[in-house]
Image 1 (cartoon, rainbow, N blue to C red):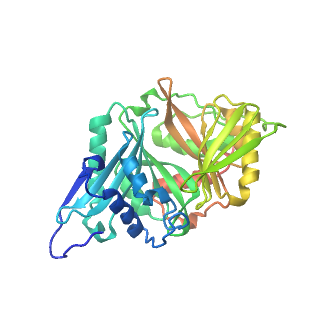
Image 2: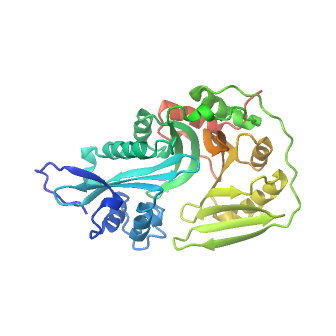
Image 3: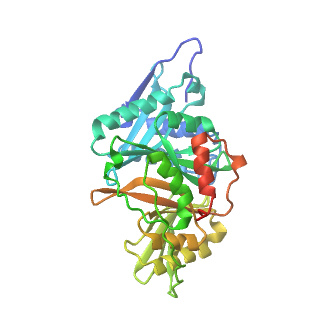
Length: 372
């Protein structure tokens, strides 16, 4: 890990992982950097809760991801001794023209040099140069525990669009995250402009509409979706990092997602295209009922143009905690998506440190229904 003489001012080099000398074990140094940053001392990285994503502590995983064509992975080295002192990662989703700014990590001993912003600028510059016609949306997640990181993101052009309530655990403490987006110029020019929203979506939509100058919408009032009497089957398979990959199926339709047993969070949810609402409702209900003892948070991204599917999640106690304009790219158009969250215990506003823009989103996410 980093070791230097305080009297010598360091100079830094920011490189792509794939261009680094193959004879040096940078992947191992990056894994050690995670451990140092999050004070991880446990030999069993699969159970620790300081940073409950053990794949990031595995040099083999880091090496594989960093060589992917869909990943831009920057490594910061101290030019005096070649030590790895920082890292920045962006994951590309070419199909939907999105880039996930997974994060920048700097050795605690080097954070006073403020090189994190340099890593971001370097990364964005490369993506703009090489993927200008491919990437239209940057997105990131920011902790609600520190308004400083939110302000840095907002000053860079990111805007909060959703709350992920009590989704994460950092340093053994449960926290909420904000979802923030940054759009390329004219990215929303091809946005589909006819969302159909049930009343429960309006509190969050109205804040987003004001922020992005979207047209007002009239709510679509629908009755509750009938709970179908179908036989549901399910299966869970565990991978090397102990993530549970769950699948439920009924009547030829499927629902799948991934569970992190350390955070008790289910995400990466997916259901069959053109699924009928009644089948979706019984699948989601069965998943909730069967996994409730080990589940703290479950999220779904649902089309803003399918009010019957929105009704399913509202019926089951999910709350609309985010609204993302133009999130999906389908048939040459950008389509809005709603974040529906189910959480065992909703956070309090007092537990968060928020910028004014972030607070506006959080307050809207905490409201259940627009008053007609």
